[in-house]
Amino acid sequence: MTPEPPAATGGAAAGGPESAPGAGAGDGAHRHLAHSWQEARQLAYDCAVPIPPAPVPLRHALGRTLAEDLAAVQDMPHYASSAMDGWAVNGSGPWILTEPGQRLAPHQASPIVTGGLVPPGAKAVLRSESGEIGPDEDGLPVLRLGGGARPGEPRNGEHIRKAAEEAAAGDVLIRAGTVLNPAHLALAALAGHDALPVVGKPVVRLVFTGGEVIRSGVPAPGEVRDTFGPQLAAVVGMLGGICSEELKIGDSDADWLAALEDTAPGADTAPGADTAAGADTAAAADAGAADPPAATETLPADVVITTGGTGRSGTDHLRRTVAELGGRLLIDGIAMRPGHPAVLAELPDGRFVIGLPGNPLAAMMALSTIGAPLLAALGHRPPPPVTEVPCGSTLEPDPGRTRLMPFRMLYGMASPAQHTGPGMMRGLAAADGVLVVPPHGVQLGEPLPAFALPWGEALPDPAAAKAPAKPAAKRPARKPAAAGPVDWSELLG
Image (cartoon, rainbow, N blue to C red; front, side, top):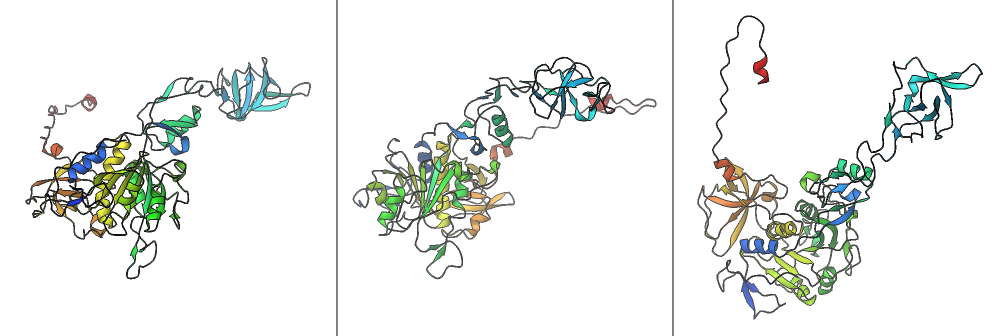
């Protein structure tokens, strides 16, 4: 369990519109100030303990960070083998042929294929194109050097892969802290491993709500298209989580309670629940892709992310459900726009619940504020960086609230994007990052905190931009070319 969250000191003024009910479900008598953006972000990072390392099967370790040094279980290769198709031979030819696998005496040979076990007594392997079988004077078959043989062939040890040639048992092959690539997995398999100990990553379960939401086609009046299904699992992967399941539920108390209870992924957890375990979250490994769903289909979730239900109407059940399960609210509203009604809760079993607003842009801003630092802390990573960019507009004050504004970099300055209403996605889709606008506003050209999008490039570091450029090293003047031989030593220096 995490310590009690600190009392909020920033954010809205007392009694203003940012005040919100406390952790008690429906308890209007106990009220507190919404956390400021900075407080919410820091609390989401501080409340989590990193998930301990655990072994995962080789096929699911791609892109994960190795938790401890990996050593060879046995010699690599663990037996002497042939590097060619041909014959294992002892001594010089001609050779009398024996059955494969038998110990070879001098002047004996036996057939062998590439990768085959070199029999006892063998001194070399003669390539198939370098030998030929023919009768001796008694009509018995013998192996002789053919016309394609090279002088001196076969030399002692030729075309034999020795045992432990690549590594001996116990040799360290991959150091802890390495991000595993496909070649690492193949090396681990050669070394005798079936699973690899990797740094912990949070397993995330997604719970979508909204009876008016449709997954395909053109919505009718009163209906809306699902904007979370196509993006949220992939964004979770980019933030360092492993999306194990997607669940669509109804808007009743029973649906919410069943969805947040501690149940195995893929179980029928709610009446009429529409599960999509194994959502397609594949992406490039260097983009922080989510693990294949099969890797986590038997693991319980560390984090549950819900969409919608964070308001205070009769159909918003998140807070009441958390209270009914014995959990507590760590963050109940943030003094920011959009995304104010975001919720972070902890259940008695240690799972975290992130409640995102139902509007897509508001949800993404809330996920960036509390989801990104929470997943970073659980996954042994530092909090997502916040840098500064020069603001390309004068932004008026909005007392008591931090505004998060997607922006485009134009002429070296961050200009707020258009189409950034809470229910819009057009501005975010074209944005280079998000401005963090303080309640007192900002003047044109003033430095302003900003953070990159999970799928975007890192924002420029202002400290690096201000650092004076190092003067180019002076090179000695070249001497004029003289008649005679060319001196090439200058090119080597």
